[in-house]
Image 1 (tube, rainbow, N blue to C red):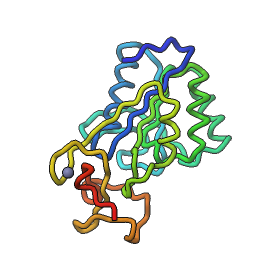
Image 2 (cartoon, helix red, strand yellow):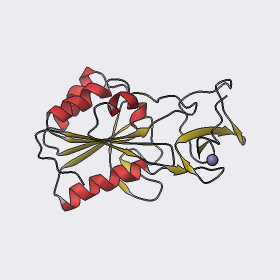
Image 3 (cartoon, rainbow, N blue to C red):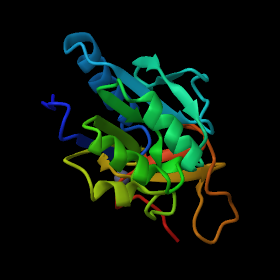
Length: 199
Ligand SMILES: [Zn+2]
């Protein structure tokens, strides 16, 4: 729980691989602030991610909250829309933030200048172990970084990588594939550094 006086702003980053309950952490913090602090909370998520429906964000363990779908391409018009919608909000959260265009950066910085507590949850690395989207840039502005771990599908160690798997075989840099594939256990596995297959 973070004390934010509504003037200085506060950025909490929640990063980790798939299956590490990033969305669960985001929802938990939003629910705590809304229900016990009486704060006004708004959650955005990229329209590309509709696994759990168009109007809510949900975690695999079962937490859920209303959320607003927005385009993953954050242009100046969408930036103005978000800033206008959040004038009265205390806490603003972005889930699956690795999918947003670099326009997410000025939006988050502006919200911080407006005194908001901003929560950003996203994958740290893509399935090839490369920095994903603007997450790395956003981390530079963070007041707090929560590194979530999953359990390695192969050995049970703490996992920070996300392995893409097709027909039981890891997809690597030399494989033909598309970077963005929304999937679940059938197509992705959490892996530790020892078990992650890169090449
Ligand atoms: Zn492992």
